[in-house]
Structures are given as C-alpha cells and as structure tokens.
Image (cartoon, rainbow, N blue to C red; front, side, top):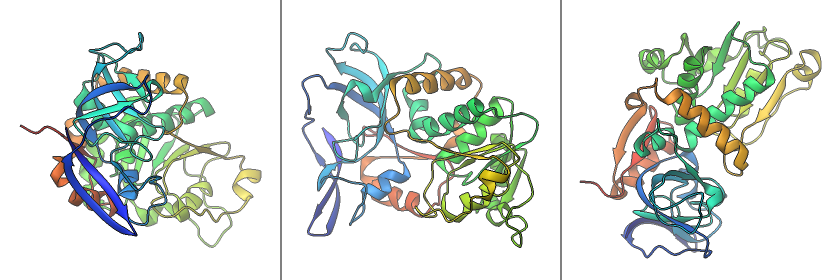
Length: 328
C-alpha cells in the first residue's frame, strides 16, 4: 500500500511517500481501508525533528482516518462498518492514517452515525471531535444561551468547528482570529461577530478584565488562555485544548477565587469509550443540518503532505485539510 512515512535518523528528518506493508501490533487489531484522513496540528509536531510528540524514529503519520472495516474479529465492529479511527498512539507511536490501510485497536475505532459519511467524518476528524467534546463539557458545566461564547483560533480546525457546533446548538459564538480577512467566512459558519486576536485582552491595567463571556473554547493556550480566564463571567468556564501559543500558562488565582471560574481540559487522545460514544452521537445529531464543504481548506494526496504540514504548522489554514490516500 502507499503511505506517508516520517523517519528520523541522528536528527535528520525524512518525509517520503512509499510502499509499506500494513502490520498489526496485536492479533485483535482491526484493518480499515482508509477513504480519507485529515491533517492536525499534532501531525505537524510529529513530522519535525526533534519531535516531543513522536515516540518512535519511524512510522506512518496521521493521527486520524475514516473508512470501512475490511478485516475484524470484533463482533461489535464487523467487516463493512463505516468508522472513524483516532486517538491513543495512532500516528505517534504506531502507524497512522496517512495510508491506504491502517490497523488499529477497537478502542481507537468508532462506528459512524448514519448522518456522517467517511468524507465528512474527516472534515470533523480529531479537530471536530475536540470541538464537540468542548461544547459538551461546557454544557455539563451549565453553559447558558444568555450571553456570548468566545472561540479563540477560530479559523483553525478545532475553532471553526466549535463556532459551527455552538451555533447549531443555539449558542452565540464570538470568533477570535488573527485572520480578520476571514470574518465573512466565520459569520457564515455561525459566529455572531468576529474580533481580532488582540481584542481578547480587556482592561490590562487591572487584575481582572470585564465579565464578558458566558463560556469559552480556547484553541490557542498561553497568554490567550490567561486573558480568557480573566474575562469570563462569574461561575463560567473555558474548555481548553490548544497549545499553539505555548505550553506554559502564566496567570493568577483571582479568576478562580473571586469569580469561581473553571478551566476544563479537553483530551481527545485517551477519551473513554463512553465519551467517544457521546461525542460521536452529538456530532451525528448536528451533522444533518451542517454543510461541511465550506469547512474544507483543501484536499491533498500523500505526495502533497510535506507542504500541507507546513501550512498547518504556520497556522495558515481556513478549516480542515483532508488527505485522500487513493486519488482518482
């Protein structure tokens, strides 16, 4: 099969497309014929040297994929089932979805709702899973429709889908972006208004900013997350999943003890089976009313992956980049 290989030897990185034999790591692994994969920021971190994310020197990249099961001994995931494959060590410590076939354990595989095609499953991908998990976490915390919900990094994969899903569920998302030229696109995705990246900061001369947001989904981290925390309304929460601006968080205790705000971490990698079922069910509920086409930045082949990974790494996307491992 054709696959996209990431190799590192003495600090020298090689990104190539070549012939690879799919190999199961465990006899119970399930073989999926890949229709589409999607590129995530994590894939860009895997495909660099040195990499703090990739745990082996050589592997097939791709942390998610969607397709059809062609070999399985699992009665709950039989041959012919349309599935999404993501999470655990896929594309990080074992061969991933940038290939025509992928072996994966059952814990990484979810049967798709009838309303979601394998194509749309990768428009959603790990990014959309994270976005919906963020929405559900805020709802479990008591997210109110009386007020605006901030989404940072709104033109990215997680951010653009968070805007879309919040709007579909009746909330008022405010999209924050460093790409204000994409404002019309974000309004069409459901944003009630668009603000610049710097406009997240409010009253910088004070310990706390004004109480502005009834909730927030932060895809950036770093200083942006600090500014979100200090401008949440009393008792509200931010769901955080991003580290584009850095892994450190320098903030104060004031938002937590004077406004009772909450910081909720969102993890799509080790999500439990019950969480996966809940998130994919929620995605299935909203999918029928969403046109996924505008959420696609482009579709590329395996040979085009190095350039596409650079685009992701530099934050130059508008939505998702899909990978078709068998073009034509």
